[in-house]
Amino acid sequence: MGAIVAGLCATPVLAQQGPNKPFGWSIAGGGFYQSDTDLKDSPGSFSVSRGFLELGARRSWGPRRSVGISLGAGITDYSFDNATGLSSGDPWSTIEDYSVSVPIRFPVSQRANAILVPNVRWEAEQDADLGDGDSYGGFAGVAWRVNEGLTIGPGLGVFSRLEGGADFFPILIIDWSITDRLSLSTGGGLGASRGPGLTLTYQATKDWSLGIAARYEDNEFRLDDKGVAPDGIGRDRVTPVIATVGWEPNPAMSFSVFAGVELGGKLSLMDEDGNTIQSSDYDPAPIFGGAFRFRF
Image (cartoon, rainbow, N blue to C red):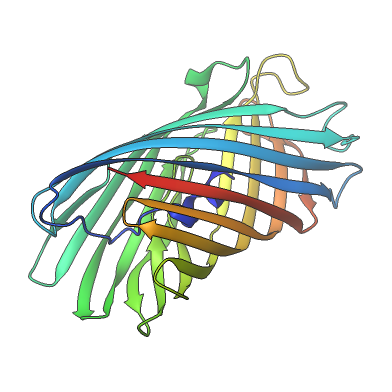
């Protein structure tokens, strides 16, 4: 669920660094809290809190060609209350995650740009072997500049799974200035994100903006060897929909707060081979938090 923070202060996938600034770096982060929510298919409830930090650098050669690197780290704390349907005790507690991604952008024609973002991630419960929680993948796409206000194209995300195999999912790459104040864009993924989401933004003033963001989240992590599923796998799938308020006093810094709800959530507990032991859907869960980004 780390990518809930991702769309808030993340640079849009198609954003360009100015030709007078060929090199830049950034620091971003934030946190959120998911209020206590009931499990639907078993007794008990749970809440989630998360903090996250990302460091990034990028080198540009003109307005359409760049390569970067992003290093992310986060901690997600799950607090279960009488979740006997998922285990005899807490199925998992604190999850650590780390990631490295290398966003690459280059032209393929006069009007089209290609985007590649290979990614390596490590997600595991504290006291588990972090090396057993590694996965690989990323996304790629091509976007065409249709006119001055619209760039759009298809993309594909691919990520390996801890139990073997891989997930494939489509991505819409878009940067659309619907009006002078209203825009729809593909926000860049942040850290644990398995890919970008979509954000509708209204620029209320020069410094302030309002938005609605949504994305599908599917996170899994290796468990330690002491619980009900030793060296097993935990999985949390959900679709957060959030309303945001952003403040960008200058191009070098941005801040935002958000509130919303997580829909269609499901927790799964699996053994080390990926066989499901227990699973449960959960009720819509209120969430709120904030994020920041500084660019240098």
